[in-house]
Length: 209
Image (tube, one colour):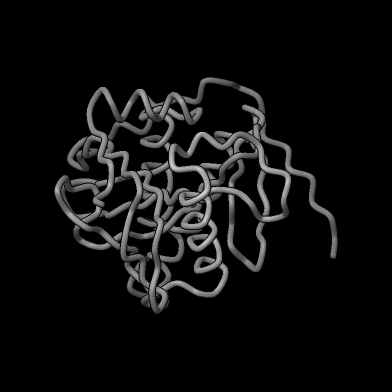
């Protein structure tokens, strides 16, 4: 069975159900791009991609923590967790099919054991609860993991929030649901106008290990 694909108004409605908006995600993506654009040829070749991924994760947390979300990093998998505890979001670079309708996108890079376990948990929960309306789970690790995947080209950003339900050899092979956001053009500088809804500073408690 193919993925349930939502776009336009349906996508916006699904994002609202999950406590998100197109504006939040666009702001996160553009802020991360501004940081990644500071990289030059003098940086290591992987620096731009690593910066974009890391800052997308950080800025997503900065947006959502004031709204009651929390975060953790089990086995170095950086999750941002919904206040109700029923699902988490993980940021990932997507391949060239990311954000396209009638496609089977994948993460750009092979994933490690932590991601494999997260997707396997999605698959198990999908079998146990086909409608995905799970509510808070009691068991350790029993949480759905959505992927916020982005693809940056010269002209635009393509982004989707998608729920994988199968993975093989570190590569996601199937999606239960895909929420396709509108492409964000890169030929205009909209970042200054995308101000946060709250002036509150994000305070994250850091515990020395």
